[in-house]
Image (cartoon, rainbow over all chains, first blue to last red; front, side):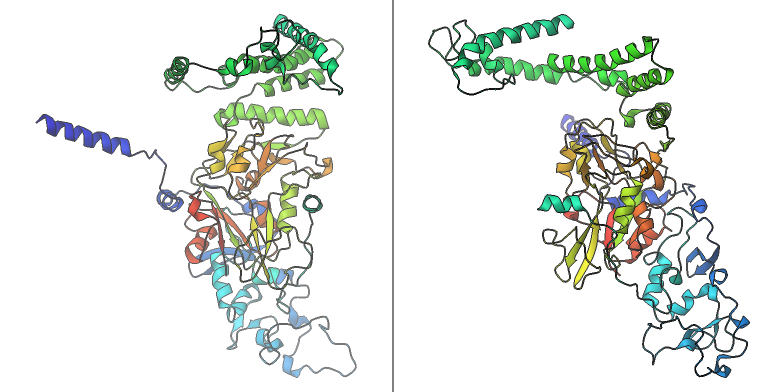
Length: 205
Length: 404
């Protein structure tokens, strides 16, 4: 009997002693994140005030619901139909006269693949059109980009592509495609680094 | 106290006099820094020579002095072991300073330092001539000298020290700063992701970080390093350049940034002998600049080169000082203390992104709450192929890399 009791005591002591984990300690960071997510409650920190003057609209794409900047009020001479009174096909360029939108340089895909009407709706210039000709609002221009750039679109929805407006806290507000990319020249140009550390350079000599 | 110092001075003088004959024989000037003191004491017999010859010198005085018998050693060890007392109630403020075992020399040194501060305080507070401001400054200096470790402070004490620092800045620079002592929020664990295929090496993050965090402009301290690496060769830090200046992105190169990774199992915290650095509840690894003694153990322990040391007094032009500060973040540091990235604690705890995230023109930097299942950082971790640097060390950095 004594031996049994001894063995039980040893087992109990071993079990208690070997479990060194304090409360809140986990084997790995992943365990910690998984465990602490279960009882997650919103910390009630808001980034709303940091969005500032940016006028936003809420969009819902799949499971993602977030704010993006409103676009139409930012376009200098919207509505386009104030000049484009006729459909594009009927507007003829007069020889020798300066072109409207002369400053636009198209560097987006191949000329054979894309021209103005690939994105702009020729019949109603206040809207964009999809490849199949359905209307896309200027405020939702990301839908136009998403037709070809699907992987970027998926990343953007999830938050792996693009930038936040405001901060990490809720509400989530993200820049839209055209906040960074000029739709007519979407490639971002190379440039010089904004700074150079002369002290490190000295140390290395 | 004063008597003891006088006695020591007299003793030193005597030693110096004893040494004169020997030094006169030398053909060169020797600076006596007191390093030879021990041996001279051992060899003082009045014959004026430090080597043997008058028979009153033992053969190896210095060795003799440090020898310790086995029994003595055992009792010393036993004393040391038995003296570990059961957990005491939390020490704070004065207790932290005074209830520490130390040898006589350290005690004297500390007392002298404190007395000097005290004497200054007493002098200014008793003087009729000095103005109210000087007195207040002295009072603040006195209280700052004896404050405890920030980690152990109660919310009231935290507020008091922050108020003192704000007032001190006001008195000295005639400018107002805003300093916060916001604690970690519940259900927040900060994490960071870095997109290697997006970073183009523009370094906007670096300059935004310097400006946000009031880093020393003289030594051009930078928390972030952007490494330019050759395509197709993986991470080769020894061949990478983190101080390039040419048009970027350079042909055949990719860019990746390093900074403090805010490890969940931070090796730098374990080695700190004074617990001046620790991991907060929201995962930020922070430093109490007023508790740091500048030993740089943490710098040596960090496997990621995440920590920086102030070799000189940090200088920031007054008009460039970021006045939105946090005690654990970008408040002004002093010479001889460690500092590093805090994920901009003054911003992140208020719901903002760190300055580097906000400044990045390519969107390569993603920041958020790891515990929020709807956060963008969680989406990245769950949907992209992510990895961390030196994962096998078990440091559990909260900084992931990924590619498109």
